[in-house]
Length: 195
Length: 195
Image: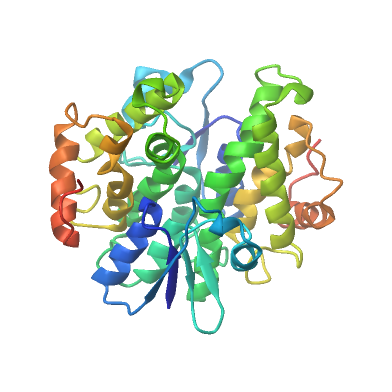
């Protein structure tokens, strides 16, 4: 199995974390987003959406969308709750992450780290979306893990960019539950604290 | 089961279609997005993310995020492919829909229909996202249904706003496969053609 990804992307890193945790042998293939690799004809032939991460199997099958990849790789593991409703709540967080969290926090980080914007110059509407996403998440992790009292894909998906919030100049000081939860998830995944 | 939703929202309608198709008894509760209902304290107490659709069961449990709701309601039905990889591809489309299609096509429609913008005045960046999303979808439906040669949740999720593209002044004339596929999915769901 090949994981095509860029290590600057939390969406890509979360696929690697899950592959590592589940002991899935894989080869990481570096894709340089900033250099335009995801827009090359060769890459678009593999994923017409022009996005990483992308997983490719030896028989040529490919799978895109980070959270779809997580769900597929982790099927049958303890990272997906066995109870149907708990699993549904995990899915709720996974879709919320891609709709309301990543387009805020990851986009703000991208503008600061890779497009050279000052955090002070970020669009106020974008900052409001970041604040709303972090406030929502703070309530979600008040008791620790997001669902089922143990690590699930929801935690993995949401920690990816949340732990990098400082890159965008976003302070986690007002979010003590998030800070505790990041430590919890990083410990589960065997990750060192970010920066 | 209660479905809290606004019929102007494709995200809400797709939940109703699935509940109807699966014969799930439910009560529809109208939520007026434009009047600010999703921002009321009572609604935020049910869904802190302030979004519809929301499903609520008699015991008080709630579930948000349209595609998470679809996956939960349709579990075990023929709308979710039995084959693991085909199911993963369906999930890829569901996440792509919320990340790359809905924020383009549904947002353009909202600006025109409900915020009174002229289609000619839409942000060119938004229009480019719409064109990219429809082009990607056109390739996906070249052979009919998105995955597994039969109707799945991927078709239901993606048809919701695609069939309304004209509301945003987006022409489907350049997308013959999408037009055929809309007819196919509408027929499966027992929906009349949109407008």
